Amino acid sequence: MKSFHPVTPGRRQMTVLPFKKYLTASEPHKALTRGFKRSMGRNAHGRITVRHKGGGHKRLFREIDFTFDKKDIPARIDSVEYDPNRTGYVSLVVYRDGEKRYVLLPQTLKVNDTFIVSEKAPITPGNRTLLKNIPVGTFVYNIEIKPQGGAKMVRSAGNYAEVVAHDAGYTDLKMPSTEVRKVRDMCWASVGTVSNEENYLVNLGKAGRSRWLGIRPTVRGTAMNPVDHPHGGGEGRQGRGTRRAKTLWGKPSGKGQKTRRAKKYSNRLIVSRRKVGKKRE
Image (cartoon, rainbow, N blue to C red; front, side):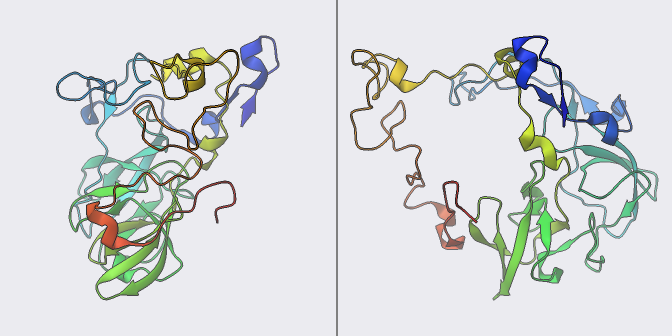
């Protein structure tokens, strides 16, 4: 991590990632980029469904390959690049037939390294194969939920899931949240962990840097009036006045309270629920 001399209050705690140490290209491959309009937390009707999103720097969208439909064709990593739309690094890869694509870069791989997507692929970082072929104890990322459905899980910087068991057509995966979940063993996954493991150490240092990222301010419920939030009101600083913390809409929140729907479709696939708090393992 790179830190700075405290010449201003914002610089005092600010840290940035050592991009020069890892990145090999400053401009994206134009043929694999396009413009797009971010939703800013709004749904199809224009109503805000996720708060605290909006503004931020204009971004160019990189078309990342999460389907990996080019099987049994070796690919070479041509460059390591920054993507403003995700926390992990991306790399431009060139397949042996000449096609170029962007993929999420795993740790330990660098320029000119190769990987392959195949049912018979060796269990080495970057290679992609069926979950049923991956031994217990292996770290994986870019995991499909449905066969041939494209990678949906474990895509953030530094993340990985651990293969803990194979049983009756399913593979048990210990997710980054500590939840153990069943996934069909015919789903594909990439071996290794996602790059940029230092991302969680970044200290933004000032409010303005959050605004550049499109993150708007968050107001505490206790600072509001009773009409605006269940925690609001009172003279001076007050306790929340209720047994459990609540959201703006009165739903349970924080402190390890369960918020999962009782009849969620994937309940039958959960072997053990995630552990919450600082002592989770």
